[in-house]
Amino acid sequence: GAGVSQSPSNKVTEKGKDVELRCDPISGHTALYWYRQSLGQGLEFLIYFQGNSAPDKSGLPSDRFSAERTGGSVSTLTIQRTQQEDSAVYLCASSLVRDGGYEQYFGPGTRLTVT
Amino acid sequence: GDSVTQMEGPVTLSEEAFLTINCTYTATGYPSLFWYVQYPGEGLQLLLKATKADDKGSNKGFEATYRKETTSFHLEKGSVQVSDSAVYFCALRPGSARQLTFGSGTQLTVLP
Figure (tube, each protein chain N blue to C red):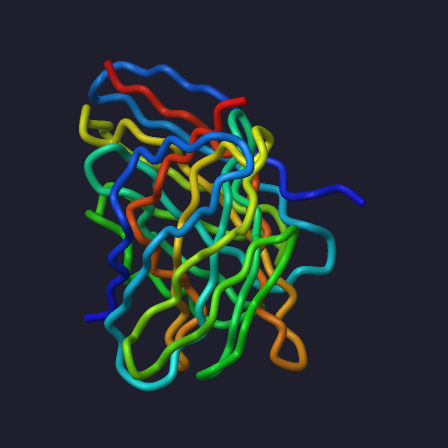
């Protein structure tokens, strides 16, 4: 079946612009995660959605970052007023949280470059 | 807080050599432990996992044993292949959380 998909695969933007990154999780997966992979910081957790519960935003680095998940499926990560330090690969993952299941399936990522 | 310390790379081996990538962790409670692999140009894939002390995870010839006494989860393979060239990430999931905490990754290159 289809895996986690992300778009765009690459995004180049100017400093100060807003960007939106999209994630389509595996159908039926109730949990969705965003991570960031950068040279200096490795792989960092950003935000987690589970069903209709309030998201866990504890990993968001600043208030310029926000995310939403519509209809329990597609998610959008928005970065406002981008800075050069936001350049990274943004990874989305989903999992089927049922009966203790928690394996996370990752998408290919969106490479964001802020110039 | 929770953290994962991973052997720094890059690691370069000849085909059929023995592989060990060290991973130690710091966590409260009883985390689940994972190894993920990222092949060139591809996304992260779960390689193996262990959910409690003394569990051994295994897949594709790779093994790792959850050692609570040494807080370690070292990755091993008896005979590596060129196709194993990738970046390997050790990760933990605390018992009370869903998100993963990753190590810094180890780049493995296997030469023919």
